[in-house]
Amino acid sequence: MIGRHLVMVMALAASTPAAAQTGPAATPPRQLEPQSCAPRGFLQPGMRFQSVEQLPDGRVTFRVCAPQANEVKVVSTDIADVIPMGFPVGTPSGLAMTKDASGLWSVTTGKPVPADTYRFNFQVDGARVPDPQGTHFSEERTGVNSTFEVIGPDGAFQAWNKEVPHGAVSTIDYWSNTIGARRRAHIYTPPGYMNGTAKYPVLYLVHGAGDSDDSWTSVGRADRILDNLIAAGKATPMIIVMPFGHTPDRPGGDMLDNGDFGNDLIKDLIPYVEKNYRVIANADNRAMAGLSMGGAHTIRHGLTHPELFHWIGIFSMGLGMNGDTAQVTRYEQANDAALKADAAAMKLVYYAIGKDDFLYATAAPTRGIFDKYKIGYVYHESGGGHTWTNWRRYLNDFAPRLFKQ
Image (cartoon, rainbow, N blue to C red; front, side, top):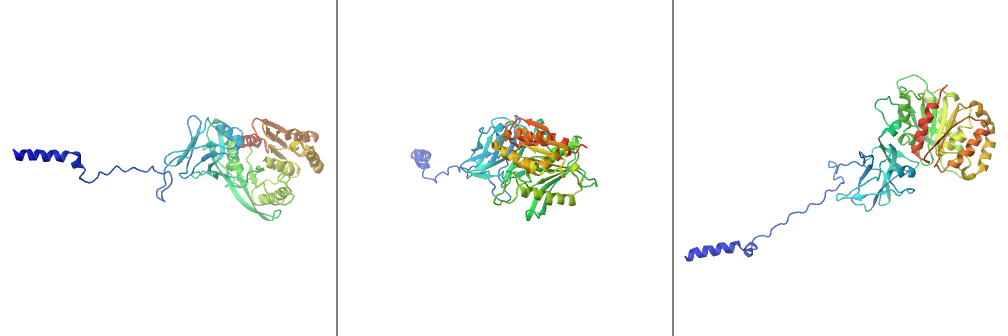
């Protein structure tokens, strides 16, 4: 009996909590750190995600990996273009993004984004950062933007289309005796140029004050627009030369009345193009157009040279800015003979501006010059303002009118 009771007592003692505590302490489960979105090494690229995603309902989601950041926004350099994207109206402050446990920041636009091409950057703790995962960029006068495209019927005119032949865009450097430095330009050659012998008319197409010679293709989509127009039989195959519209700063220089640009264009770039490309080198086959600052260059160095250009396009720019009627008078006095010759020489003067453009008031005095000198012109007044949304569409309307003999 004593043995049986002793065994029972020992068994009970072994099952008590006090006995359990005499063994080694239990190891709590290990808490795993959230996986970071950042790359962990050359062979470990990190989390996969789309930095820009077009949603089925037309809204757009932006994402960027910045685990150490405290505040991130997605911003656009084209203030007027971002208003439809849900950004605060009238400000460039952008959309605030939210960070998840992995360090990935994201935000979705509040409403659908119209089909078009847009420039954007991320603002990471106050620093402007192009999309680290991006592959499409646009150079400004200084700095770089990322770009994205929203696909849809309204943007088809400037979208890449696998069903049509495509031209090529080249970047060339040339020496400018006018500037005393190397200069750069982008040149579009139409489908068939590379393996053909034909000569082509030329459009000299200039960007605005904030941009560069890269802009008319990287965000303006000039090459795609012409590819689609040519394939549809709407535009004459042509070469497009896109110069750098800025020149080195110097005392007394004027960005909008820039003789250095005009001399470089006429004395250096045009001769370079006509020596190195198969072009038809006469005024009937030479056009000039530009937007904003490029429009000012066209007014001053294209419209005033009927011996060089018989086709002119002016987008979102005019004379008489801020009511300066003296500017109009000075322009007429300096170019009176050329303006009189324009009436007979010009085959097309095309003038386009948006009703909401901050330069809209310059349209009336500029058109007044055309009327005074009996220069026939086509006037295209659109909605919207001083934006690439308008300028792409102006080119799409202007290009089919060119070189119709």
